[in-house]
Length: 75
Image (cartoon, rainbow, N blue to C red; front, side, top):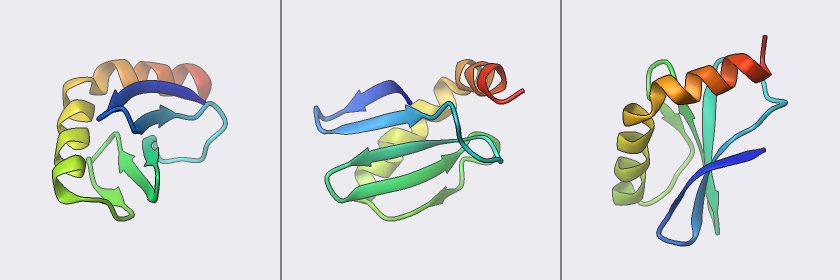
């Protein structure tokens, strides 16, 4: 697991090396456990909307880098 970014000193955006398709990242911390698609930016799970908006915006901005990492770990 690689932490790609931290939000609010409590939540982590993780890209996991041994994970399943489709390409995605995990937003975790406290009671938050959300999966965000790198293809559609759709999400599964629940967390405060403002945190989710912040995380999805960050993922959109860094999508290319995240996809490169995903492809490196999931050939």
